[in-house]
Length: 496
Image 1: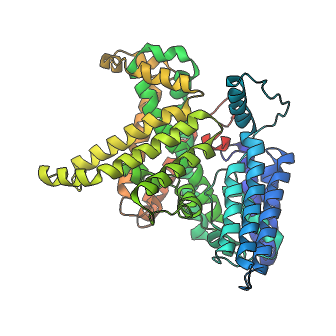
Image 2 (image 1 turned 60 degrees about the vertical axis):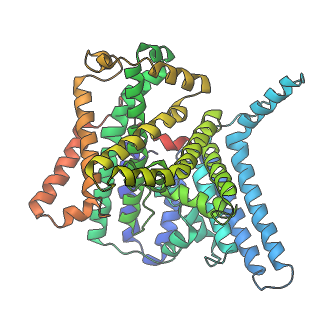
Image 3 (image 1 turned 30 degrees about the vertical axis):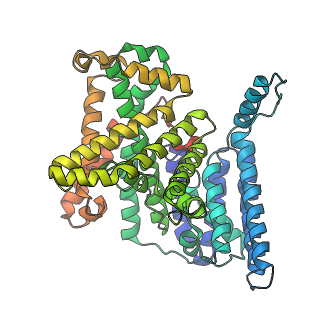
């Protein structure tokens, strides 16, 4: 049940209406039922995996609590419980997401050794959202171990923490210390809160339907036929930049829909994107992009590895491990490992060059606060992110290399001779794309002080507020990209 589908537009108001009508003390029960129904709408059988991960981590929390008395051997026992919780959950993730990737890698090694490959008839579809809810469930195990959150004895309330439908299948990945306490208190209807949640959902629909799905028309056409890679570097360059913005608008759109839907119900989720394209470099970019995932890897992988407390070389090794793990988390393909490794390499190089850049900046008199410098920094971030995203989008390493090779055949005249109109978008769609991206950057610029677009609207006259809202709805309805019979386009991060 996609957020941009008709079924969700029926499901969500129904859930909200019942939620605020029924007694406060049983509202969490209704949300749990709604969340499991939402997940089972994808594939009912895979709800068993969600329940299994929930049960394992809930039980691990209870067992860890038993050894929090400081008795001899209790520390070792807690570590064993944590290890088993991680092992069981990661085993589920491996079987359903990485089994064929691991088997393929093993068979390549066996062939090199002139041994018979391993045959397997095991075939399953990737359960939607499995990477997200397993990380969220594991964070509870670690938070209980670190005594950052109290053990939740009610398994059904804990199950709602793991399965809360607005953020179940694509995040944000919430920490138990942030979301679980919100589940334990009732939420009353608040008009202003509901209104702000709906405004955020409207913005999310604009990002997804008007921007991301329109950019996908060009990107999918170019990537869908490898022979297009030889048609000129301008085509590839445009597809590269378009995919960078498509990824952002698609995932930020989903995140805003999730945050808005949760806010309507009375919950506050983690802001997942903080104007990432206004970062000064790629290192800062990854603190603003998919914030909840970055925070998870920092808290539960980077810090346990030693973080910044170790020597310089070891610190950079830790950085690379985190990026490689992030790449593997995104998908069972060598392209994602390369993607993670490249991002790690760029981040390390930027850190190594920071002292040199500071000296050069002082000698040349560059002012980081100037408009020109900010434009150059954003251009650098967008280009580097887009370049690495080629591996994210490509289905194989050969495809990525061919794409980059084709981009080297750059003929700038192709920007003006109509060549770009042969790849799924006409003049009208290019114009809508340009205007919508301009709107995206204007909003990001207006909110650079940390405020939100909703905060800006709140202080405007009533007529202007309603004018913006009505115009926004009209733009989404008239210029959103819809398939035949409103065939909703899947969000990019649903495949993870």
